[in-house]
Length: 449
Image (tube, rainbow, N blue to C red; front, side, top):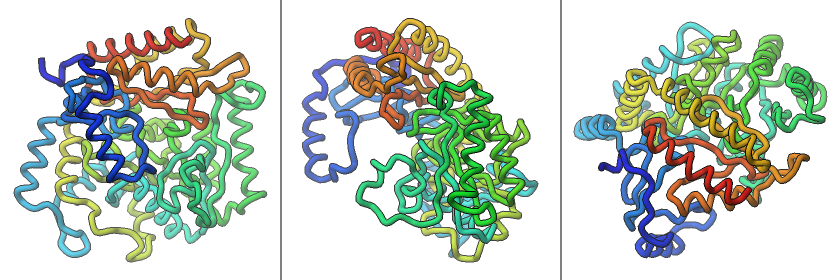
């Protein structure tokens, strides 16, 4: 059986002897500030599976934190990268124009779920770069200095995106931070004050957002409101569609641009190619969408999508960069887009979500440590609690993550309180692998309930 079809199999004590040597080297040559969650030293990966240097096989439900939607070592991507690498690796688009950048921008423009008719795409290298450039584009297009972000947000680790990010554990000792970034409360319905009914809670959060115009920045000085359709690091908290509609209305009334950060939700994860498609269907499409992570199957690439009208207002020279739109990455990204559309990866995400959510909700009824189950498509989170007061239970999450790893299932925590386990398994996972992962997960929950 190939690794692509394999099931979890642990052959050594963890970490194994070869992995220990590699992690000793890591401690010598790599900054400890770049943390490692698992002592797993990968030898190869196929589909949703990883084999480590000691021959242990793991089912990966993390996917490089949303990078591997199409899976490890897709053969078609390998061939696309090989073919382009034999022509040229890179050209800087400020100097010599490479056609693949244009082909990819054109293809993405056709599916970009943003307001406007003609669409344009700027390519960059990472999610943080995309988010920071989206802010620059919004400021340049509106002539305004400020932006609004939200509690629970994660947007990156540059100076600007650390400021935009809510959890300041990611920014200790990094100040002073850029000015003009103001924070409203995100509609975290499970933890809304007083356990409000959903409609009442949404009204509450909309009013809290509007209050910023009185207490922090006049609306006339706000360039953009930026949010994730499903908060990633914040605990896999989806933005309710009625709240999004209200944000769209606020933006339209005040000349503010609405930016959705789809770095993690993009590329079929949500059950659409982009979660913002749900907004477009509901009449509240964003003005700007950012993307990264799964765009190129693991090669560094990211981007910003907006209407040509918005892009035309950007000051010459304020956006761009040396490696933006690297040819090899673009070749991979074009193939990713082709495969995901051809093989209906959004449909795969919805099928996975149906299977998982059924089990997750059964667990919620069986195990009192599970407080909430939520998500959009195959971007799902389970929140663990200690009691009826919804006290966050990060300790049990740590035990579950460790216990699952020992059985060959890779899980990762998230959330403001570290009490959420997230699901970001590659969307090419087989039915048998998914079932095996769910069984391992429940066994470990039961052992710690």
